[in-house]
Length: 85
Image 1 (cartoon, one colour):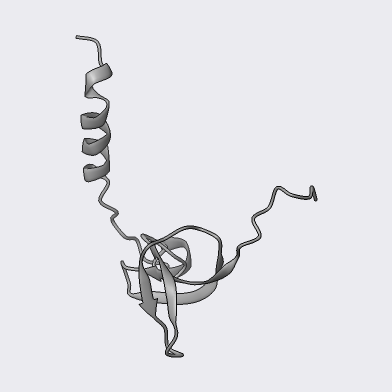
Image 2 (cartoon, helix red, strand yellow):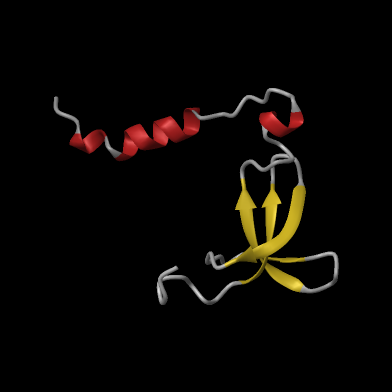
């Protein structure tokens, strides 16, 4: 591996899937302003997830409808000024 290209500020963070209220502790260097108190009583940075292995249809065997209409409308509104009329 090349030296000097990998981040060196890995720390413990809590990843929380808000669709099924599942959380786990792991390491990451992603920036976040949110914090949460974990089961051990310590406060850790929080990274919010939309989907994880606890809610993904591949792992659960259940189909789940994911609402993408809001994202599509947001994209169209953001780039409407570039469309040719």
